[in-house]
Image (cartoon, rainbow, N blue to C red; front, side, top):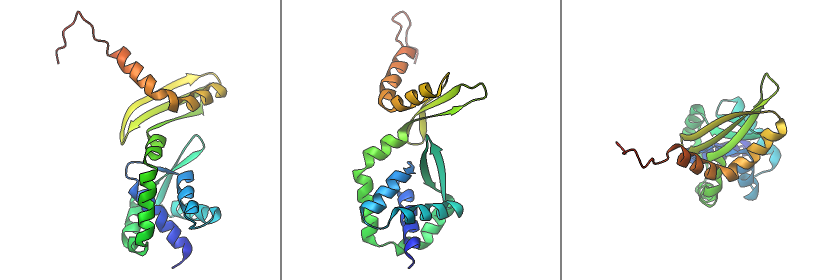
Length: 180
């Protein structure tokens, strides 16, 4: 079996097993290189070919690529999954178990920004719980440095922000009865 073919199958298997999350280039590379499967060049070649063939889709958030398996990728994996050895599959599942918190955190809380027509920047901040969006906040700021600062701080501040927002918007007024 061609080595690149195996790397592609490993990547598809990884993307298929993360369920509701995406994987970043760093996460895929980390697994493949830390386990001594291949080098960076082969990983990038494999990912590029998977994207070109429509087996993997990529979404870029703040210069970080997030990969998901497509329906075509799932179909291809279905036909060739048995060519991946059980020890490799086990290593992937163990990696996900060890990295579960990191996978969850990287996919549930994120922020990005983009320039708009007026020269300002729009910042989008998200908190997700699996496939459900809990917060989708957009704001316009006057500078790129402010947009970057907000994006950089969102992960650390998002939980407190969410709790504060819920508390402020759902104040229990002692003079009103709760009709629910």
